[in-house]
Image 1 (tube, rainbow, N blue to C red):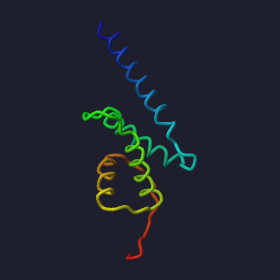
Image 2: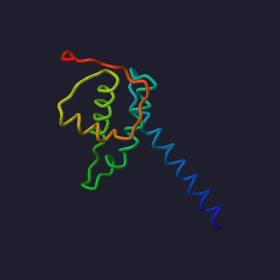
Image 3: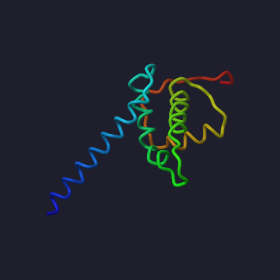
Image 4: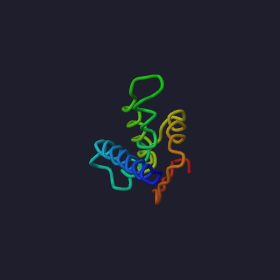
Amino acid sequence: MVGGEVAVAVEELVLEVHQATNFAEQFRSYSESEKQWKACMEFILCHLPDHCNPPDGGGRLDQLLSLSMVWANHLFLGCSYNKHLLDKFMEMADGIGVEDLPQFTIRSE
């Protein structure tokens, strides 16, 4: 019965998403606003499979969490980082939409 198989697959998918969201929630910082946390969680969940079970073995969850923090600090606080790191986390964040970001100016502007 195809309908029953689809329903089971949907239930499993919903359960996996719920579990991933609960897992990510433990890394929320007390100082993060709801908007900052939503963006960070999307970043984390987007890359979680690659960092928890990478093809080369060994987990890199701490690296993912660090990258999500520097990305959020760059967006929401205007922090600057070296070009290599900036390119890495901006590439990882490609496709993640964040609305109403603060505008920052640097001394040379």
